[in-house]
Image 1: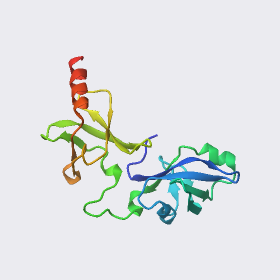
Image 2: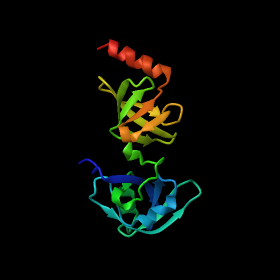
Image 3: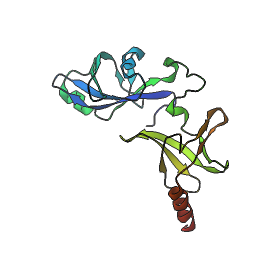
Image 4: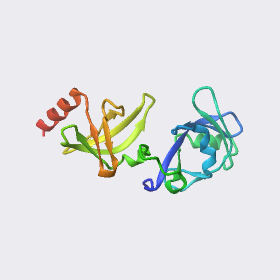
Length: 181
């Protein structure tokens, strides 16, 4: 199953915590403790629902949560890797200069000369910062681009694209790949 388009990822369960069924949660938002205010959260495919009873920050940038639906460590361990989402309609509309990462998915990625490079297919963070996963045109293999002002100098979301300035080696690599086809 795929994630319904109207679900926004807010956090992910990183692991079990303790023996009473608590979980460690990695928050994705600017205000991690706001997670509890959104009401019940769902998994990425909208099948399971989780209600946060208690939530606190730990000293490692993670949250420790007690979930109504989880009563023991075994259940908590089985949820490792579960992405926690909320229906977009329950979130505030972003300000003019703000956006949700899900707004980037599906947008064209254009070079600074306005040439189409590919499409944004995902936004990820594997621990080293936000990355845009881009599927270059005429390619079967996606690539990651660090999501910084240097590599993504401008966003034109209402026009359906972002401008990228990939490092030189990425452009050379793409040209080499195209020449091998």
